[in-house]
Image (cartoon, rainbow, N blue to C red):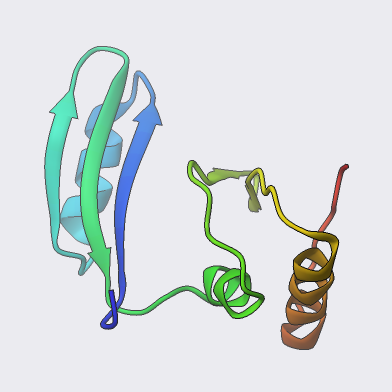
Length: 103
């Protein structure tokens, strides 16, 4: 969206109450779509597009979900041309993001 990023967040976790409390404490509008013993699914809107996602879009690529956040790293799969991959690398380097690529 022009005003921000609309996100569906699924956390496979036995600690769903902690995840729900976190979302209750942050200033993001959110809806709990599903919760059970193994996972929680939350929909929320971020008021602005995060810089890594902005870099992906600026390089002419589309964000392919799911994005996985683990130990401070965002990981995702990307199918693209060599030219757009080079543009993404340049965008990450211009903004100072640390990245790793596996082919």
